[in-house]
Image (cartoon, rainbow, N blue to C red; front, side, top):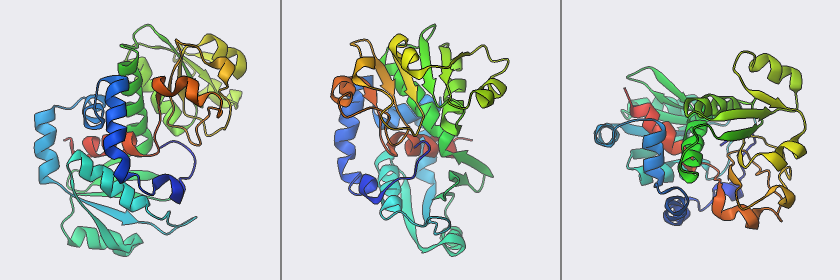
Length: 274
């Protein structure tokens, strides 16, 4: 999940679609949702399975700010169950919900407000932010989809945002040649000084040249049909998705996009890892 508030419509029924979603991921990347989470966090399957089975997870409703998104906690629970976690939603919300989770002996809590979405491992005193986890998962998925990112040029849209910044770091670790488009140019220059990153000032022209795109922007309709070629691959955690209605069918088989699945799965794996 990247910048942008989810809606009830987006998360309702998400759990019922996980099997089909997983099948699509395998077709596109060769890896299941669980495998993407494991590999993006670089954690051994055997080690994680034992850790997941031994951890109890609480999902807590938070009412501050703009308030609760209906069915959000149910969607989180569904994804965590799908990955193999022992998870429950607290009856209470906010501080009372956190207290309830601890009183019921949870090891990890998932909770989100308008500013952050985190998983907290209490025994390890460890906080995993959704922005980092989402970036890690999507970068791995893009890497798998294109059979390797080393020395490949990747355009990151919204590189100065929390997900975009983390994506730049993970892309660099995988050997990609990273370019960034960020509307606030001064912020981008300051943030990426010394990182050997190309800063693009014209998004339309950049999209015509780059075949691999990581869209972490909340902007709508910025990727149009004329930007799509048979060699174009897009990882798009940003929401709403930046592709126009005309562009979506042309890229569907080479697009990684969801509202919560990858980010939440990676959060869990990162949270249980010592």
